[in-house]
Length: 498
Picture 1 (cartoon, rainbow, N blue to C red):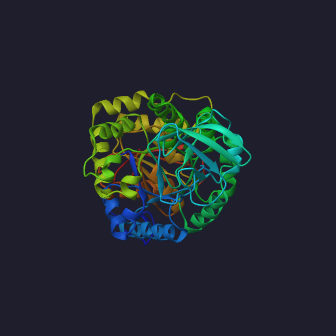
Picture 2 (cartoon, one colour; picture 1 turned 90 degrees about the vertical axis):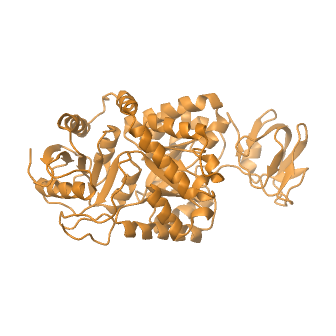
Picture 3 (cartoon, rainbow, N blue to C red; picture 1 turned 60 degrees about the vertical axis):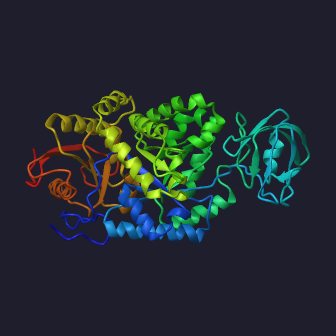
């Protein structure tokens, strides 16, 4: 078997690959980097615990901090010899209040507070709301939710440049808390000036996905795609009622979807959230777009070594629903048990995926063929059925753009999907997709070359043994994006064709 190159998971001339053997777990895990996880040793530890992708929250930290974190992930990527995805989550246009003189104020129901444009530190009488367009859009009687819904205010007066609000609920309000305004389409652009600067920096640093927050309309995604120019995939974060109203269009324009339950849970009734989670997952899976779930999945593990039973059930439910990926936020960014949280999520995912009921549910939730399905979709669907019929050890997809592997992930096969691609950028993005184990390969000249490489890679990753059957898909001519038209059955290590 040929020696691995110095690029992650790279095969040489169709030979073997380097790198650690990874989990058979199909559901992917995303970890947010922050003060509790910004050393090389901690990034390495999180990856060993089962993390497939790392997230940068650009709402916190300086550009140089994020550049260092990207460099650490790439260092671990070289060490393990396999692609690791990086998501850069833009801050977005969410309104926030300013700072207080003493870091915060005590609240009591009925007290009034002025929200104005004065940047001076606030007190019990007033605080800055540095968003004049938001002030102008709000009317008396409008409810404001701050600090993820912990504080509820009602507008009682609006005058030129300021609001007067009454406290309805909440005991304390501290610096820079975000504001949600349910049922009001906010007059803000999808990307702020800060977002534009952050976007340029992280694209130059080579991130793989851009998280687009507070999307309200399809035009927001179209504008972001224009700015990104194909240098990274676009993840649309579903966290507003308007996004739910435009869900089908947003999924169509996005490359992936994230269910951001924090803000969505503030702006929508809590009892609707589980229903919306299932709906969004179904919509994304039907479109063949990866879908991730985030917010408070193992929140108690920011300060405790074990999760609550309710959190374990929440994680399991997301997996039963068929999500591609689950994300840890504060648990790994600021928590005291970052690696333990990742390992806990890994164990829950493995246990669920081993449950016979899980496979029955996943198969029952499979989207029906759509009128817009292409011949390539038909080939991939046939590959999954064939893999089941012959007891294939894995499905191997040779792809340049990643679309073939994403189509395979939509089918949610029980066996792993080995995503062979000559594009390192594609390999890194595919770390987000259900069941896909991306491998960076050379370009191949023929289907037999693909078969031989797939066979060696399957053995190297311990996905198959000598003599096991496997199913391989590709496009002829090789490398033509989006034209999957070949399915082959092969037997591991003999290089022969069925």
